[in-house]
Amino acid sequence: MAKLLVKNIRTLVSCDLQDRVYQNVDLICEDGLIKAITDARQKAEPDESAYDQVIDGSGMLCYPGLVNAHHHLYQVFSRNLPQVQNMELFDWLTTLYEVWKNLNEDTIRLSSLVGIGELMKNGCTTVFDHHYVFPENGGDLLAAQWEAARTLGVRMHFSRGSMDLSKKDGGLPPDSVVQSVDEIMKDSVRLIEKYQDDSFASMHRIALAPCSPFSVSADLLRESAKLARSYHVRLHTHLCETKDEEHYTLDRYSMRPVAYMESLGWLGPDVWFAHGIHLSSDEIDLLAKTHTGVCHCPISNMKLASGIAKVPEMLGKGVNVGLGVDGSASNDGSNLLEEMRVCYLLHRLNSSKAAPDGYQVLKMATIGSAGLLGRGKEIGSLEVGKCADFFLVDSHRLELVGACYDPKSVLATVGLKGAADWTVVNGKVTVEHGRLTGADEEKIVYDADRELDRYLKDL
Image 1 (tube, rainbow, N blue to C red):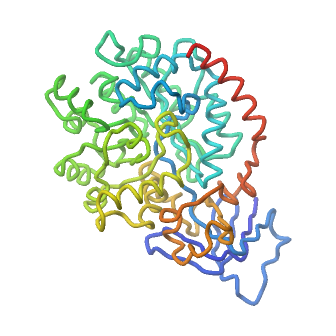
Image 2: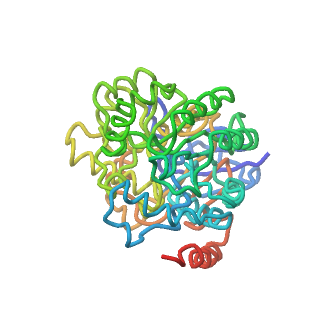
Image 3: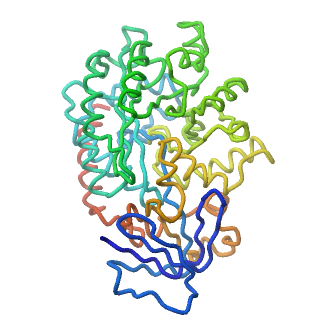
């Protein structure tokens, strides 16, 4: 069994239920799990020869691996396009679907390598990707994504997203990226049986994730919920992201988005929504009562001028809130550490004393997001018996001088400039001294740039 020792850690922030912070400890990992957290000042030095790898944690701050609960990795190849920089969601989507309809396996594999790699270099160890664009003749896109995830060593949560309403049906996407309900259900079964691993500490799972109320039919939402529950997989979609969406469901179904989703069986502890910006207090109460989660994506919401989610109210009422970077086309980055700091500052500006503090934001990005994925007993905190997913930051770097008196909050209040020093997933080093260990970064960049030339040639 593989054994890893991280010795002499300056501070370990556990994010456990007791909010324990350890000083001067050794972290012992075995076979992908945390075996012990021990006092590094004990008289007997650990026998380093008993371990496959030893990391010197002197001066290091250690945190649970960040859990990204909402992303669209394929959008890495359409970020910072000048054509859409000043658009809001519906116009932004309509324009970009004309780019996204050209996706293929190479685009997915390379954009996943880039996006996951950036996330991992910034402390992320588990990635949920909401992939819902399946062009005709695009190939096996999730297989291409799995190749990238396995190469880099990330803990991956896939989704079989879907759309069945094209422009001719009153939706936004072109005909070439929508499918029938029967096609979607058949492929969903195939992918669930291929990627859902319910075992403790599994490296891959899948959710069913129709895109949004304005791009899918009621039949697709209803059938997806039935299929997901028959296989015990989770459900995810965008909800309450913009006022345009609210107007759409009111005009079409005479219901606000939450009521519409409730009518289709889309509330419960196995469901989480991305965004949740335009929620009323009564709707927040309903989400709390039904244990339905929300993934907050502040940078995307700001860039698309969608609004500010009522995160302080949701947290206060007991809604499980996690954090996600959303697609790179509406964020222009895949950095959950940056998302944390923006989250902290945005809500300080908007809610003052009611805003979550820096440590609460860290817990949103760790144990909060882990709960959205149904994995709170495995990841999201550093405890004996849980997965050895964590990252290390050298507290002696210039940018952190004078900033580490509150190690629980520093990542959100001050932020981290530059990559994490080490990232470990399942007890294996995936980032060492700020560089990916599973792939050649320069080759990824070279191959990605070549694919970008093909993918964006018609812009």
